[in-house]
Length: 316
Ligand code: TXA
Ligand code: MG
Image (cartoon, rainbow, N blue to C red; front, side):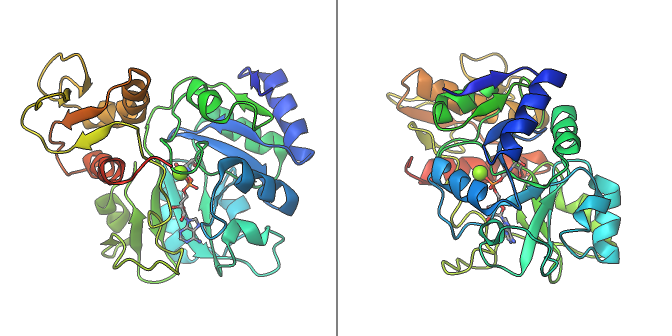
């Protein structure tokens, strides 16, 4: 059985023991819950991929407690240090040249010469990383192809029985996955998230490209090509003006509704509620949803990205 661990010293100590023995522990970050394994433990990472049913071509994000620790696993250029200084800890992942021979499991990088690193701000994630004193590979804690979890209940519903434990830190504040910024070439946002491209460009002092240039099925440098993590069972119709026959209305900025991402039209609230709402629509057995338009700016960009995936992908 999967144990639910409390967000206290005893819970963290238990999580550390499990991780050091090669086990899997889900933990909260400010974006979504991650499923952690020690990133230098090849066997643990293999078990992690298996527990999620995740294709081994899709590399994992390595979580560390600070930028100094990140520098043990990747080369941080001056530019990388500038963005890290501005946004870590926080909802930003940096793709950087991996340090050769650092000891990271090759399964973490899927054989790429780069590595994705993140310093989460959530106090429980920080406490865990400091206590375990090892880098943690942690993809979102959902079976491959399903909605990312923003509560421990979501984690247990999807992975109960397949992982040793989940640290329960309540609901995640940001609600959508971290922004992924690739700094191995000209700066490019590979996945929209909590940190916007404009803010990144400002910290870098240079423009930042957005989006993956073209589908490149053989190259896992294009997150999203393999990352079918956002599919609910319900069929979603986006940018709708009203609910059609047999559809449930999912509102935004149009006042109190039975289902709404944010009655007041607050993008941060909508992001925080997005996955929980998709989980709840599934739990309610709803088959078709008409989704109100979401402004495509700031966090709205990340929300629209996830909704577009949820609308087009079959649940796996
Ligand atoms: O907010 C988040 O980022 C959450 C929390 C748990 O930290 N994690 C998360 O991980 O969303 P995951 O595995 O579900 O998504 C990781 C994404 C994948 O799309 C993967 O392709 C990309 O990161 N990625 C990892 N390493 C990469 C690399 N070296 N180059 C390009 N993309 C990479
Ligand atoms: Mg994911």
